[in-house]
Amino acid sequence: MFVAIEGIDGVGKSTVISMLRRRLEDSGYKVHVTAEPSQSPIGRLIRDWLLKPGSNVAHPSIYALLFVADRVQHYYGEVKPMLDIGYVVITERYMESTLAYQGAMSLPQEWLMELHKFVPMPDLTIILDAPVDTVINRLSSRRVLEVFEVDREFLVRVREILLRRASMYNYPVVNADRDLELVVGDVYGLIINALRRVA
Ligand code: TYD
Image (cartoon, rainbow, N blue to C red; front, top):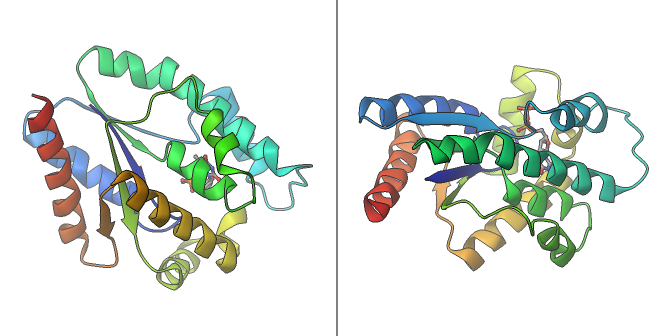
């Protein structure tokens, strides 16, 4: 089973996923955890260029094209091979990140969907959600902010698109503005239920 955990910057995706991995492994599942931007050369280009403050990228479409190119490589080069040998694959970010972040850069949703023609949707997409002001406070106490993290209005638009698509496609939305154990418990429950359905 292929699971994507989505949400705005600072909502706690990586912490939740690492705790989740332990719980799923304790329950006897083989788990592969991964993230986008991925470790591929395209992922590296994204980090070293697109996400660097002051990077001076010529057009928003380049973000979409590179994030999706990284995704196609990530899926066929890493996710699918692990699914094929029986792992539960959990990715931090997948297509909803492009629909929401590049959608918030005013790129048309239909074109962004079209770019995903050659990769499947995950079996389960879970949105971690918290108010933008909560995540900005968390992030600025942690470290220097990346390009998208400094722009409150931008993150507000990203969150709106994530929530709108969640209600369109029935993605579960987990309130991440709570005690970490509760958040992990809810996400774990959603994954276990989905695993039992496919078993
Ligand atoms: P992030 O999850 O913060 O990666 P890291 O923890 O390695 O810094 O992702 C980096 C940024 O890229 C984040 O602000 C969201 C953005 N992003 C997009 O705009 N589109 C995408 O398709 C993806 C995967 C990420």
